Length: 154
Length: 344
Image (cartoon, rainbow over all chains, first blue to last red; front, side):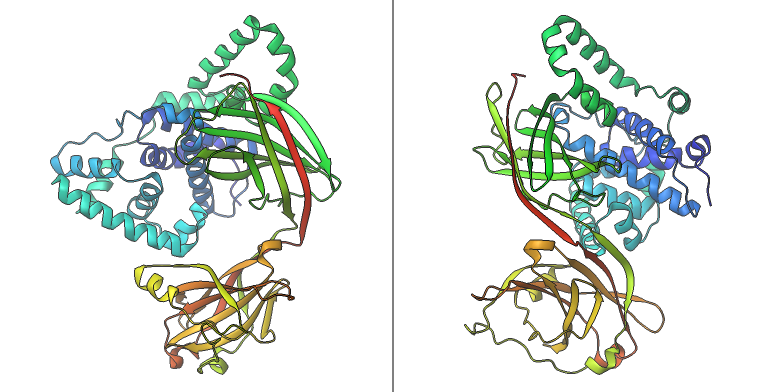
């Protein structure tokens, strides 16, 4: 059993949560808010986990849900993300950044969990609470879109 | 290489030490996130400046504040309720912003439990086509009260008029929902590696209508639209109460597993099935297709067929597994609340 120690959770998974929030919102300010929300929820609910993987998946799931709530909030429609997340030092990174900006959040979350966190599609389905077939279809479509967009950018 | 580039871009991203410090400080003091402090301050100024409004909205504000401090800054308390079928629905607070509206709703009563689901039977009465969704955000076991956040948005972007009235209604809800995850179905698939009888397409006496489906890729989607339906029979297996397997076998070279969901309009029982081979490898369906009997004078029955691309000789070495979702109770009623919308 993993005790719910918030400082330990922030230390181990702070970057994981923050990167996920950045990937979805593409705004450091939004990611800051989500980061705080996620760990305050963690602190308040004090969940107990069977393993570190379980704890990491829980934090990622809450992060995704908080980002989703942010996007569905009506006042969000008035806000324009500054898209200041990634510091791109070469043309390739810049092209990837531009392509990601044109993907929807649901595709970016799948891309991030697959390519950065290294999860399989079944694990992503658990985290995102979507059917595995949906995740596979979204990953396929996201790759296709990225391929098309990167052709345009490069 | 996309994956390498993406990894490098993300490696550079970390929360700032100040953010970490502030977050940990808040876990001790339970303060709000920094950017919301400004909204709290603005709300305080509003209450001082408009004492009538503050007195009118205080209880609703407190209730909403306990649930979501952030939302409390933006929502207009309503706190109107109605009771039907022993269940009280209250519209706690609402917010209209442009083409979108959100409402916090509570349901209280014996039929309400922690799995309660509004089952898409809620409605914001607006003269526009809308896209809506709803999520359960809280459940209080002592008072048997479930709280939901319902959201809607006009499809054409038309702004929702404020300064008038709005009506929110609910027709039913589900409770007693259960999930059985990764359940192995006790069946020998080798016994079903045969051609199965299908319902003749277009035969009036059979009267099965397609009700949708889903596919993992475009090839599966194309097959789904032309999918034959196996003829339903008595249950072969009942993995959980409310979901039974009523036919299995090959049709058109693909292996079909037919699940009867009962009346899906009443309980929304459903499942996701997959096969596991002798090496423990999972095989997901190529597609799933829905059918329903709309014949007169019979109870409605809904069926889902999960269709797998697997050779008969390999099927014999597989087992059937699934996640099964069921509900035990549908509570029907007519809950309807009209409330004023303040100008925003």
